[in-house]
Image (tube, rainbow, N blue to C red; front, side, top):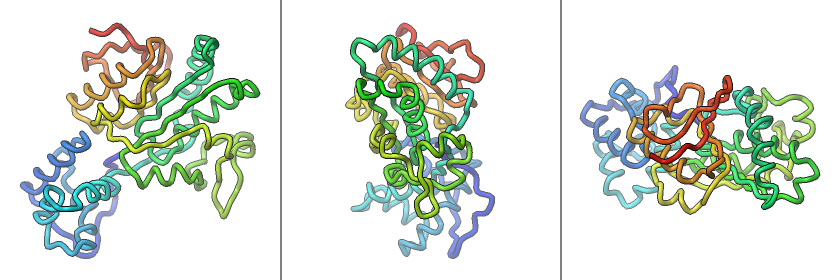
Length: 293
């Protein structure tokens, strides 16, 4: 997932202007609900993404919209609609190949050996966007276990704050851009062309379950239990340090003692005071769970 990607063109019919005061109120609401931190320099992103929404709602301006989000009878539904519009979910299959290679060749064999008594493996793709990441992990697990998969309980959970992208994920159909990094042999083995799109094989789709989750809601996340691997890539760069620390502490609590956390290549969790230790592997961006402080 890659929220808050700057648009190159942001004009729309009936474009409205977002004042500094309105921006401050709206940015506060977004932060309180999702932990997404909009700096003042990003005011135009909210303005451009939401101007058309004001037209659709026949609203006079952003004051009315902020009030609607605060005390309106459909404020929860509108928050969901707003998040769908202010986040850009840039992702694809097999994104960051060196990192996925580390997962498949190092972490996965280690965990399969460690779990051979229970034959249970749990993976969480946090902020999974439209599903390319958890489905990629499912393909890697599927081809690693092979015929042994029938003897294992493999649970892969994909969560995201946006219902819109989760609908795409559950449909399991993708365009050529999303599958551009998929090797031809993998494409022919795990996909079939349907109505101009690539549809995932049912054997992969049934390995992944999708749920809506706001990463700020740590209590809701706890119900998912403990995981052996957690992927959360290219999301925390949009959080401030308190929000990042909260999310990373949650991951620490819900990761198995020998589990692995993977983060994005431009993200760092070293200064957050949470007991994770980086793995000494180039381009892995992987962290093992250390002792709690």
